[in-house]
Length: 391
Image 1 (cartoon, rainbow, N blue to C red):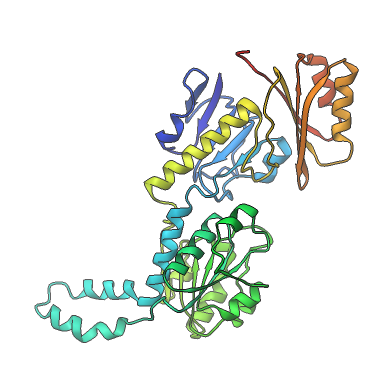
Image 2: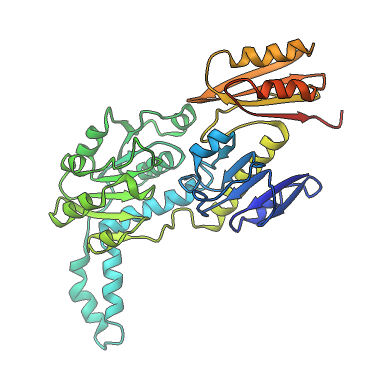
């Protein structure tokens, strides 16, 4: 029986995918095998040693202590693409409200409620809330993952010219991206050509403050910026200064701060990017299926700290090893198995930066003494065995 802890309210559409005869689920459960989380901050949380995996029902994962998890051999999953349509729709809305001053117009209209001459006032004041159309303008999309690709494609359908920048674009994303989207050779090139700029990249040390005063100086005058990714990608102080100086026309963000909200040219949204029932369902389903596959077969997909790894299990015993990415790890694992006369039927090993993951299949049960010897190998972080049943 696997034990699953939930740290937020998770959609039943996802949780119902845990078979009741094999899983116990609760928000307060001792020694869980896995944790499913949405927005709860785990950075200061003491994670039980029993935890094998954490699934974030969403794309961002800065609420999870990934480095600490990696050191303990805890696989962290996210759900890229599951909420992509929801964020895409908000990005398109953000471009429209940054152009047409719709928010300002709505607020002004509400202020004249109850006046007898509303119709006359509306006609008289409407010119204050004019703004340009999107059609024919150039959109720069920074980050061409699941969301960025959808935004780029739909902006093309609206008649915009689209430039994309992503030095790490995946093969899958490239297949889905319209061939009419122009490729920017550099971020600087994109910024200098775009009327609208939208960010769809994860937050990391490399991307923190990617839009600062230096980069803003390269932009077209009157450019509009959309940030529905993470607040730290943009330097608030530099954005406000550019807005007040008239360099930038408008900044729409899903991450308002006191400094930003003090500026009238900022449109703050209360982090609504993935706040649709469809997105919550999709994220929960994806998170649960990834946890199930890892616990039951050792398969890893969409992990943020360990490599993608899949091997069809055709033999009854499966050894899973999480290790540091250092030389001769596989050799030491196989040597220990060979010393116990255990024949390896199938094997796969992959690594991601500092960590590796190995799957070894055999038709012989692996003695505890052998497992202990493998655990003692320098660089080995975690060892687990899955016994296939039903054969």
